[in-house]
Image (tube, rainbow, N blue to C red; front, side, top):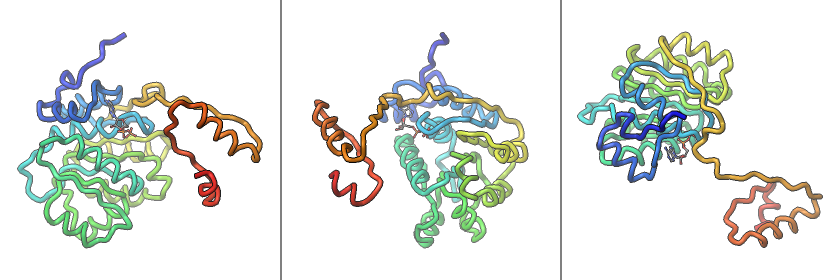
Length: 262
Ligand code: ADP
């Protein structure tokens, strides 16, 4: 088997290595081992067929954080598009936790949040924007988001964004960014619409696939029990009882069930 590379061997700087250590990552996940060196060298665009939980955020976040300049004026250097507000916030939190002491500002810009606050934030200057496509497009139209100096564009969960009807917004955004930027596209599936976007906008790119078995967290064992409706509650109680320490989340279908079970 091929020897696993360390984060240091992937070529990351001391500053970012310190942040990784603080974060507690010991070794790169497969997708990280692949994308980090390529993005640090700025050689190619990448399509990653990868599911949630494979460590995608650090796979693009670490090389971006390492490459961006800190004496930036007011233009955005990296734009990450994500399908939902929750994902945008999650990605932006993860990137903030990976940047360590490096003076880069990160903002999540999503639909449903008041415009005023986002406009103020963008005016002050942001290096990395994580946003949902519709709201990002709004800001481009208003002139509040300047992408003319963009170095990196990332489409996270691209298939989900298309499923949610963001294809026009995405195409418009892709048309308003510089051609020299590096682009990454992550998607769990590769429908023809995604291939079309790649062909039209990504120039030279490399595709790779991260298999399920490569997930960063496979510590969860999955079990199911078939019980009649009337026995469900008792069965759950018994499972909780036989576990020495039960820490968990119980999902229910209705509000009433949630009240009863809790
Ligand atoms: P994805 O974007 O693929 O859904 P994330 O980037 O959110 O996955 O990563 C999933 C979880 O694994 C996060 O909590 C993240 O901090 C953690 N993680 C990512 N890379 C590593 C690594 N190399 N070592 C340990 N944990 C990691």
